[in-house]
Length: 113
Length: 121
Image 1: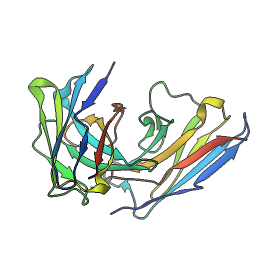
Image 2 (image 1 turned 90 degrees about the horizontal axis):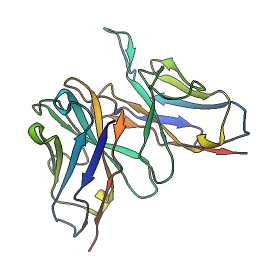
Image 3 (image 1 turned 180 degrees about the horizontal axis):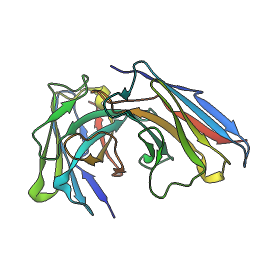
């Protein structure tokens, strides 16, 4: 199975500052035939289902604010929030869909300082 | 607007069975793969199973393989998860999630609110 490891486990950032979450996969999730990274990011707020933020590692889902961005390739990926807002408090998960079984990172809890 | 409504969650004894349903609306159900993802209380997300748009291809996490069975009834816009041999570590909120266009469910762009399965004596 592909193991997804996020860092840090928790993160405290001031309003308006940048937040960065890292995700490392135990195997490459870049499919060479289409040059796509099979990596998504989700946001989950308490009591709510996950919400898709980013897919194909860097494509922002429709309606997601442009302060959210995804980057990386192969085995190392990053979710960045350029200017943290109060409503961004949540747990964030990376997710590989390159190989069955699909797997998620353990989650990163983002809080306001 | 995509809407996914799960049902069927309940308290069940170890070794018991349960069937979850997910009724979909707001998109052409027959064209999209679907996923089941679960979340144990206070824990992270775990992909459970996926099914292709036509139902011909199904995939499972090792933790549920041989015990769970995913299916869909496209005429009713409904996804199912038949669960047998339930164990305490199957206790979780089960989310139905819309996958991507075509056969492979891949990532999930819309999620239901989930249904709680509790396995306990």
